[in-house]
Length: 60
Image (cartoon, rainbow, N blue to C red; front, side):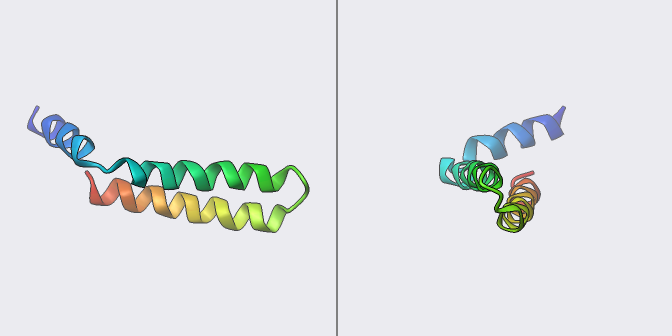
């Protein structure tokens, strides 16, 4: 039960800008794929996954 409490406390301390960065990169990655900028889209997807992983590790 204490692990769940620690997780919810970490989420409460998480700054909204961190989640906005991850979400924004994901949106741009999807948008870049539409006009056939596949390389840019894939690079942004990997940056997005890396950002999300770092946030998950630091705040859990």
